[in-house]
Image 1: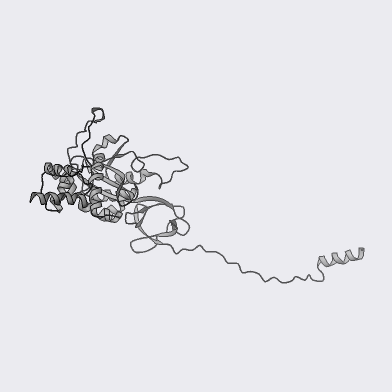
Image 2: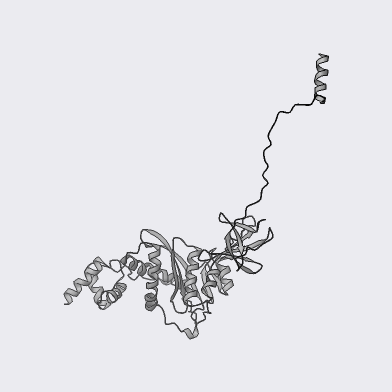
Length: 353
């Protein structure tokens, strides 16, 4: 009966879906509880029971309304990316790195990490490359992860100069990257986080997500449902995504670049270890000392070296610097011979006294 259905709905909201906005709750009832109900009936039912939707409409003043920028026409033409620090799940704040297509509002990549990190954006980028291809352009915040900021010569190293990391990766793949300090300029990704902080948080609480590993697995199931609800249909005939490299090359592109100098043993130091380069036959490459080489720490933590435009694998060096061992001398008491000048000096001194 309608009375039993009403009690069931109110009981579900009170015990299982508390905190969901009413529209989201209506969708969850249909998808997971096999209950179909109109929004008007649901709204009346819940408000009469004393509940208020957390996402109630606020009055928008004209002076706060920013004009919408026209969408790009093609899928993959512009991808807006950003990170949002929030209490997404559990009792600790994490950062969600997300990418949304400007033409369709589809989420094309998302990854949780403890903080806003280069690794988080790389994992987000990997999802884009794996599932869609190479986009034409990224639009991001003016952060050092994306924007080149030259350091003083005293502090400048290839590891600290962030131009050589995310932006280097984009340049190598042929992706343009533009940055802005105006949040309204990338309104789609900003609005996306507003939606996710409402819906995604509620659903992860519902499914008792407690760890970052569980959260990233949950995203794989959530994103298709989100895109179906909020995204526009994708016209792949108008897609500007270029074909992706193979998985081995993606692992190398999404890397951190370092510079090292070879020592006398054709080896170099990296993170408390000594390494040597080996060729495809497993032979150690002999390199002159003081030669500069590039080291790439790949997404899977594999180390690759580049020397004379060739790629080399690395092994931990067994080279040890040769040192000359000097045997200690056996010290014996020295007795001067009878004709030693010292004896003559002592005898002459005694005669004088």
